[in-house]
Image 1 (cartoon, rainbow, N blue to C red):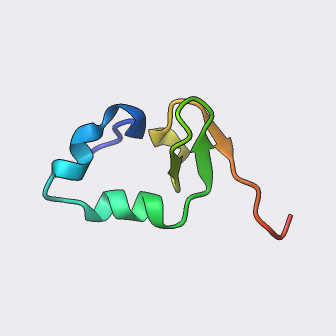
Image 2: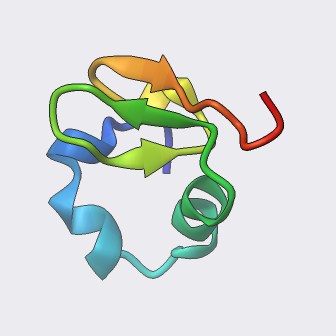
Image 3: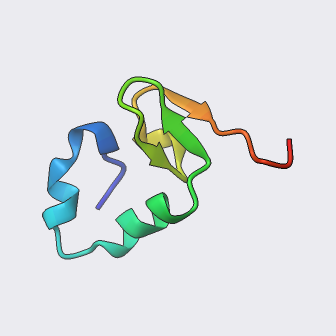
Length: 56
């Protein structure tokens, strides 16, 4: 699937391989300051910012 930006990848939900998408969404570590999407990989977000954990 490659490293598409979640913000511009509406088609990800329609592709056969949803496992990679689910891995990015299940345990998010970052969110996009532009569109508020969350992901485990900052590279797929337009303007990523690290989420603070409840332990911090």
